[in-house]
Amino acid sequence: MGKHDINAFLGAGTSFVGRLAFEGVVRIDGAFEGEIVSSGTLIVGKGARVAGRVEVGRLVCGGEVAAEVTATVLVAVHATGRMAGTVRTPAMSLEEGGRIEGEVAMGEANDIRPDQGNGPAALCGDEVAPQGV
Image (cartoon, rainbow, N blue to C red):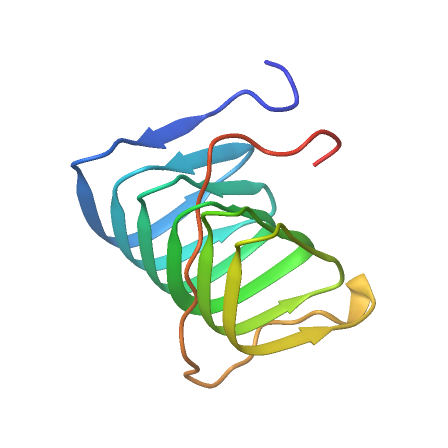
């Protein structure tokens, strides 16, 4: 399996409520509400909606994410991406047209830790991870 091969997929028109833990890469094009935990990459596709708490290595956002987000490597928001809430990450990219509403905390990778409180959410999702992500 290659670096960007998708291990799991939640398609458009589907919804899931609960907890998702995974390794590798997962793409969501449908609706997810709950908790997502991984050291891997989460891709939230255009038109997708994610709400709750997200703790991943990399987050690629092209849809909507309403959650407290902690990404230990990178958050990439595409032009169609919408994030609302608290975002903690050591690195971030924001394409023209992408939106972030809320609080963004950036520090060294070793300093990024999930908040133990209940914070707001974020909006995110798009097609594929950028090169090198």
